[in-house]
Length: 95
Image (cartoon, rainbow, N blue to C red; front, side, top):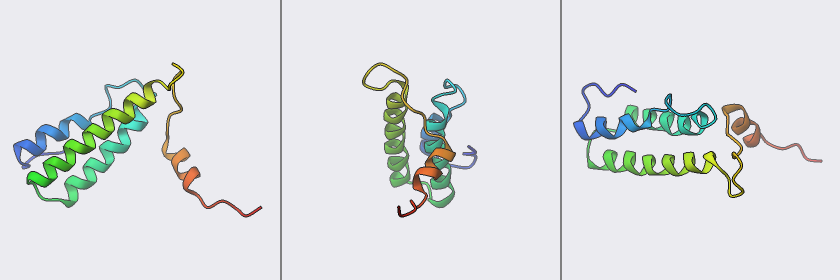
């Protein structure tokens, strides 16, 4: 995520969307938030509202990664992949 020429507050928050350091089964969940953060950086100007947007997105990412880490029975939760998200969003054929 390139934050060259961005406000220091924007760059500071944006760095926390990195996901390569996470275990492989958590990376797809975190990457969804990384990709959205990149899109927001492409579309929105620096300022207090962008910083707040990124902070709240970061909070949501942290929650999602924790949820993916373990489900409520102590087993690894199902991990979202782009293919599984697309498949679940596809229109269902009438039976």
